[in-house]
Length: 313
Image (cartoon, rainbow, N blue to C red; front, top):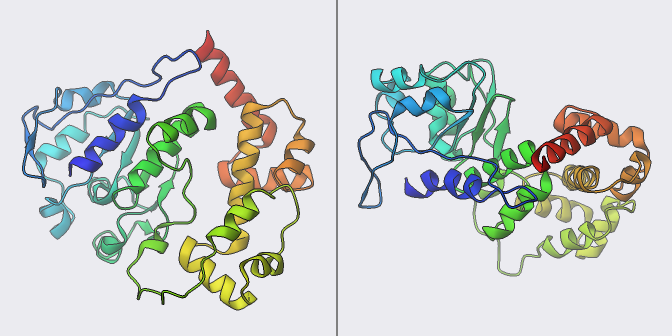
């Protein structure tokens, strides 16, 4: 699928540090170095073969319609297994959309959380019962193994990797260059096929924009519903249908992102970061940031400050 194949070179290829220097080198390879057909009526001839995997820090496998025995029986073809065996221990491995089947067939997802395109989630779970499949999210970050949902969710995952490696400012710059949102609300649950709402149905988009301008203030569910002109029940149902998470979960996600940006880009004390992000007390910020990214605010700030200083040097 040319779109999915083109996501990593596009996202990582334009990521730059403050001095305008590339922060990634992107190589594209096939198993045997020969061309591969696409579903778009043309073939692609990458510059490298599977030998490139032996030097990679991150390996990204894009989606394909031609899974063959992987889809039918959960077995890797021998050439693919041999190619994956070239990957060094500790290398970060990523799948986009149906490429999660490749990781699962290689045994890399056993006992781990993962996702794939929502249309394949049930089949994926039956084929690989040891995998903890979450069909509702855009991507799953399990440290050294990451999986994305269908198609454009690969963009979300790659932007997340840039953000994880180099901070939100670099990732936001890439997103602006690609005319993409730096962070999409909710998960892929909002894209699962459902009956279309009536044309007169209200939307929560204006209320979400209103809330984003007021993250530093307490925001209650009744206030959000009142701004949208809906009852609590209707607002909650409509919000979840549009975004894929509850209003409370969405607010927490937005506040965590605001806090991460402030920790990376400002010298504000931790208590002021907590206040500007709407968490109030530093203890609440610590709890939610640790849940989201696994570290405390001070450690998060040190990590990204050190990364920027190293890049500058």
